[in-house]
Length: 284
Ligand code: ATP
Ligand code: MG
Image (cartoon, rainbow, N blue to C red):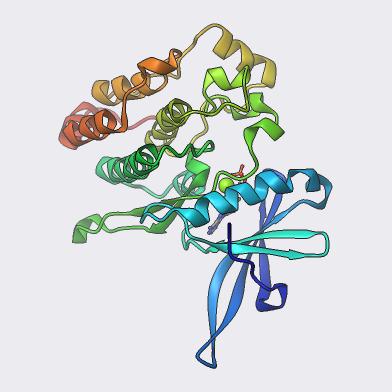
């Protein structure tokens, strides 16, 4: 299903932290092609030794990403197994996770955020056409490959990362509000509609400068949020708030198609938003 990479061909550089049951490192991989050595910068995602029982799910995520190709989907080069170590080798994306990038306080314009949302929608549309469920869409899993420069008309460029360990192996409540409410009852039955919900939550995050919705809530409060059918605080931009609400509909069947999402994103005019905010500072 995927390319096996020899452990000897990998070089480990600094740690970039931890994910869900994973440790993340920057590194390099060496290939020999036509008798010449090539090195590529890579990201090494190693499954925690304490969670070896998740390896199937971990490799399924690698396999999924290896089988599909789209400009806004992260490239996975393959996997490497070395003794007890299970490693996913993937493209290193220069500016890292989008939530951290936005939280660092980089001031980006509304049209920048809208570009990112459109790029994610195009990746989602691609997956929808192929009937592939991602299952872990959030701003943390959007990686920023290019910052863009508005003065020169250059857009940002994002790539959607691999879904990682299946939510069924994790604490589902932790993933509120990104995980669709119906997943709480059936964590093994992810559908395309679940990704629509996550898309809505992710767009919410992007327009709230990477701040996590429901930050600091405990698991019980999060569960109650869903049990009482609550919604995230709406954006002041009515048309955007409406799109997020449609995606985060508690009735999965009512969530919009990707075509509809793209059409609605294309009809958003950023000047409307800027007029709305011209008299007041944009609040967090
Ligand atoms: P999850 O499955 O929950 O997404 P994970 O194992 O993918 O967990 P993350 O929390 O998504 O781990 O990623 C940890 C950090 O590693 C991110 O915040 C980001 O800064 C960095 N990172 C992840 N993937 C890449 C990549 N391909 N290129 C550069 N940085 C990355
Ligand atoms: Mg991730």
